[in-house]
Structures are given as C-alpha cells and as structure tokens.
Length: 158
Image (tube, rainbow, N blue to C red):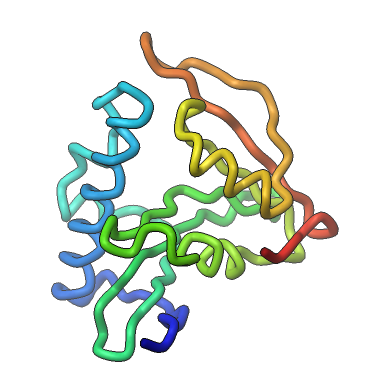
C-alpha cells in the first residue's frame, strides 16, 4: 500500500470536514485517556466550530481519498507558526503519519506546539523531530501541558 500523500484540505467540503472532525475526536479521545483528562476542547468542538478556525489544514490522504491524519497551524503576527492540532486516525497509528505531517510545517520559521505532558508518544515525536521542550504549564486543574518550539535551523527529519 503506497504512503499517503500530503495535500491541502478544504474544510468547506462537507465530506472532508466530516472526516477531519471524526479523526480529531478519535485521536483526542486517545490522548484524553493517555493524559487522564477528558476536557480537551477539541473533544467537544462542533463541526461548525472546527470549520470556523482560521487555520492552514493539510492531510495525509490515501490513494482512494481516505484521510489518515491531518495537521492544522496558525500563522502568527511575528511570522512564526503555531501548530494547533496534529491528529492521526487511530487505525493509522505507528505508521509514520504524524512525522510525515510535521514535515510540512513551514521549515523556515519558528514553530510552536503543545501537548499533554503525559502524552508520551507525542512528546517523543516532537523531541525526535527537533522540537525543544520548554516549560510545562497547567491551563486547568488536573491538566499538565508540555510546550515545544523549533527554529527553522533546527529542523530534523526522521
């Protein structure tokens, strides 16, 4: 089976948006279990709320059009990139999809991302791909988040 290809996603398309929403909920449900916190905002986000986000969306799309995962980022005023969400369909876990998607974050700019500090697979992924761990923080009781950043010059491929 050929590797999925990275393509821009158009969330104005109902089928695409529904697939992204479903994958996001499934992926965040796994993260909620890993970190012991089910208050992740994206778990309760409606399809309309997700579509309203001003983000750049790309997906790992299979030959038949199935989306294996997606990445969404915001362009910051200072020119940096903030990864808003990186989600892989659980059926596609451990097949390199997240690494493939992160390879499409603009490499010439500083990028930031956060994840649950107890999400060991995500923490390992960001560190392996050249992100430097910053300070942990707690935006809500019972939730500890890890922050990461990567400068354009520290990009590392798997």
